[in-house]
Length: 86
Image (cartoon, rainbow, N blue to C red; front, side, top):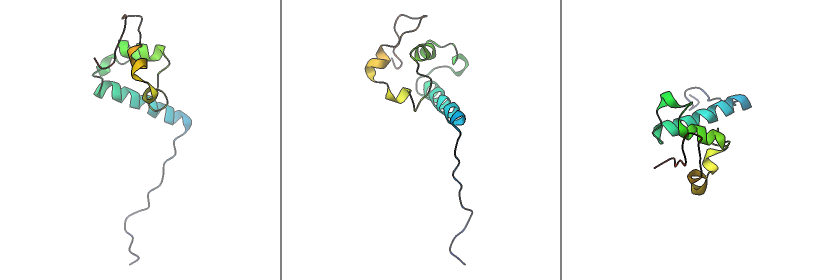
């Protein structure tokens, strides 16, 4: 026996379009699981609308770089001032 078992794993490289879709899905997952946003309202919820208004549409490329001041300053046309985690 050669000492190895199983099959070799193959790294999967995503295309830029697939990576962007996965990044958007990560943001949705965070907003639903951590932020408490109802999944059924993901297109019309004030938090999502305020993030989109400020250009925050992806998790790794946008959301993780937000500071507390950025989050506190989120505004939506439906609400005066939003805070994500209050």
